[in-house]
Image (tube, rainbow, N blue to C red):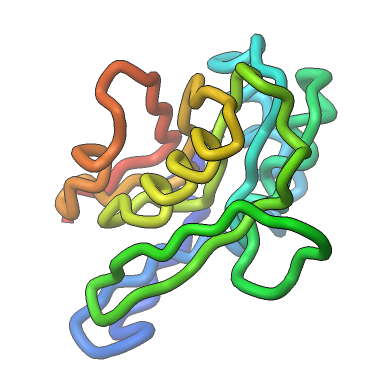
Length: 171
């Protein structure tokens, strides 16, 4: 299945000059999500947990966890999770943001695959890596449906950890 052919280009969203890569038509396609999950399962079959980044990482990560037989842990925006959390503030292009993950969920030394829909500048994935490490687990890989190569986000991630992007855009 040619995933790129189904992803929709939306010019000038969310602001003028930005070409948004919309994966919703891919998720709506009868075999779209199944293809995404199968390709990530082929690449990463030996992890203890999938950590999905809000919110499209949930859509992809939960069925992937079922497919490979591991746990699923969401990383959320602030104040969405009960109890004690690991939290991290990180920089965005125009400001800062915060991510949280429940404490005590990941087993110590667990192997974790981080899943999200897109890697652009890499800030969210790098922050999620730090959350996983705060919890005492290890990042075993990253999976992204779309990589915007020209923004060089993978440079913010550990080069020793496998990164799988199903679709790449050069500009």
